[in-house]
Length: 100
Image (cartoon, rainbow, N blue to C red; front, side):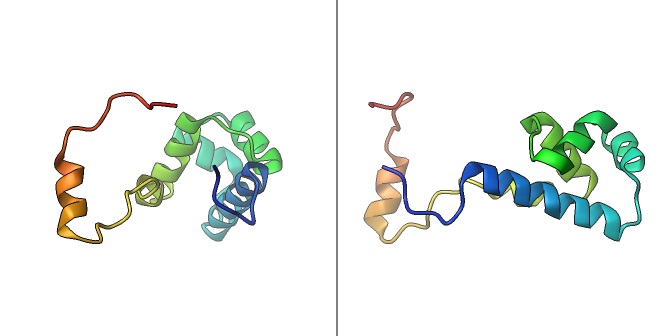
């Protein structure tokens, strides 16, 4: 079951692309500048800014180059424990695979 969200994956990818472009332009960098500094091809960067499509590896390189890698590293952090019981349960052995 998926929690309710106002966004679709496509919405988020386009939003990220738009934000990246705004950061790039605020630094007065051309696409070629960001491409060179990040190691991501200019064609990949252009495609991302126009469509929101990019590989995870390239997205991480861009985030690193722009000093925003910690933002990405903050994804999927488990929720804080509500009690000592929660903390103890987290210390128990976790399954290596999902059950569904």
